[in-house]
Image (cartoon, rainbow, N blue to C red; front, side, top):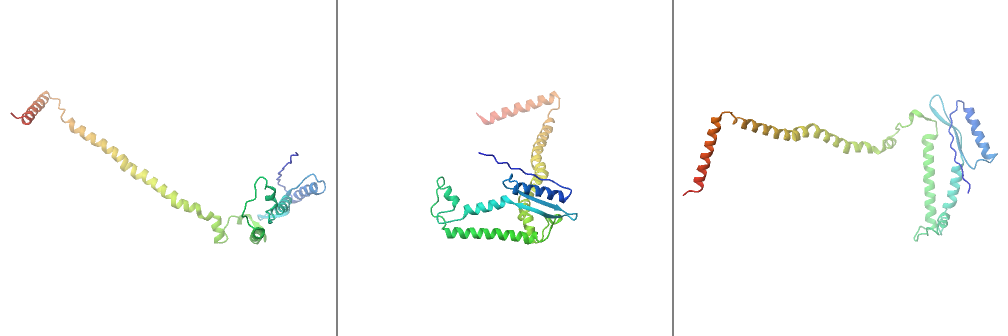
Length: 229
């Protein structure tokens, strides 16, 4: 099986005549020499004012693909030719649309595509497109599409910013005042207890002996009260 080669060539020319000369050479290789099976080619120029203009173009693969797609996609009562070709592997499903319905859908889809091309030509093809005008909203619908239905703005307002503000409040208020305050409060309480208990450590033996005596008296009194005769 022969291996086809796909080649992509893009060049920049200082002169439009040089680009047209190479364009004609590729066309001659296709039409006269027959060494190219099919090709797409275009010569695009940009003027000093920034206007982009298509000087020459040809789209052979697009034409061939459109013709082939139309041939294999024409519906009938037994399905499309492509569906019948795949029938041994992918059997035709029961209850599919009739040929009339399928053909109607085919015509409608073609009309929608043609309407899209016509609308694009009406908006952009009647005059050269200025590079500076690309991405500039012309009407509310265009602005809505350019801003991607404001999905990013809505996501930022409803999710990103609330979480960001909550994170700032947790970092600047809750953490230092509640978390750190709780930990530091426990530490300060223990320090206070330690300072109070430190007052009992006087260093005088008489005070310690007196404390022991008071404790002994307290123990004896407790025992007498707990177990009276």
